[in-house]
Length: 272
Image (cartoon, rainbow, N blue to C red; front, side, top):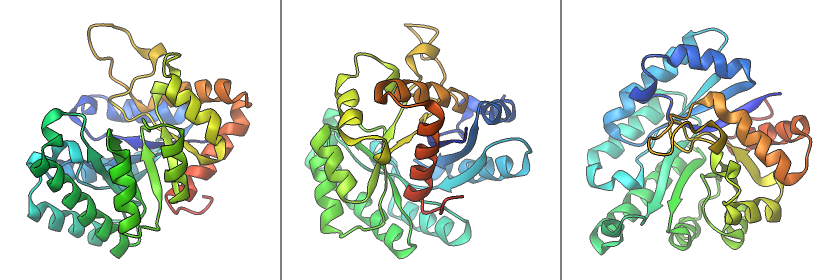
C-alpha cells in the first residue's frame, strides 16, 4: 500500500532527535510521500533544510515542500514575510502554498483588526498561488463561510486540500465544488467525532485525502496519556486509513489506492 501524508510539520524541533529513524519507520509501514507545511517565516529555513535532509536519505518517504503563513500566527506576520515566501516559490520546487486560511478559534482573532489582517494575508497568498500556479493547503477554523467567500471572490481555480476538516456536510460540498479535497486526520479515530464521520459518509472516498498533521492530532489509539500530549508522527498514518476504511466499509488496499490518487490530483502531481 502507498500512503500519502498530505500534511506534516515534520520539520519542527519535536523531531530533531529521531527524524531519520521515524522517516525510515514511516516508509516501512507504507508512507511513501509526505508534505512539509510552512506556518511561520522564522521557520522557513528549517522547513527547507528538513526537505533537503529527507531528499538525501534513503528508504524514507518522498518529501514535498509547501511554504506558507498560517492564520493562527497572524500577529507575527510582517509584509516582508510575503516577499520571503515568494522567494521560496521562485527558488525551490514547491508543490503548494500552505498552510493558509482563516482562524477565529481565539476570541482575539475575531477582533476586526486582526481578522482583517488574516483576510489580507490569505488573499495575498492566494494571489501568489495563482501567480506560481500552485494549489493551496487550507487551514480553516470557525471561518468556513468567510473562507469560501474569499475563494469565490478571488476566483481561485487551482484547488488543493481543506486540511483537518472541521466543517459540516454542506461546507465540505462547497469546498469540493471549488476543487478541493477534504483532509482527514487522526480525529477520525475518535468515535465521538460524529460530525466528521457524517461528512465522510456524505461525500465518499473520491473527495478525501489523509494526513497526520504531526506532531498534533494524534490518533486516539496512539495516545499514551490523558494529561500530556502524545507526539504524533507520520508512522501513525495507517491508523487514519484503518478507521476510514471501517467507516466507509471499504477494503484498506482499495481505499489506499484511491486516497493516493486523490492526493496526487490535489497537489497536481499526475498519477506518480
